[in-house]
Length: 89
Length: 101
Image (cartoon, rainbow over the protein chains, first blue to last red):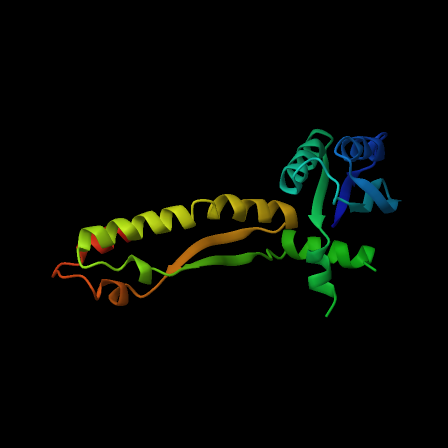
């Protein structure tokens, strides 16, 4: 089962590290990362494998959102099916 | 393969254009609650709905978090009560209405 993590916010040191520490803690494997910084704004998308996650997905999504708030970023974890349903026939 | 643009577009739909799931509905058949005593029938209806739909809101909220999309209404839909109340030997069907409420 795959989930997409999206991070958006003002660029600062330690964003990727902070997100990956949590993912690793719950045994979530990162399969792909795309990231860019545009005019001081950081945007990142990670495709992750959550099938072996030790934390239920809803709870993990909430933890990441809270971490994002602490760091003044938007961090979302969503199952990939929602993006496929919107953009693939 | 998912595109950066597609993902941002979906987020935009949810955040800025208020895309949401308007309703999820759990359908519960009350036909097996029929009984000639209206109070027994009412109790059966109450027990069935409260047990089957016990986790409806909780699971709905988990789905909201897993997919990152709001679900505005969590509804229950039941068998037309006239069919269920048909076996009752009674005039006022008020106990059934109170059970549903």
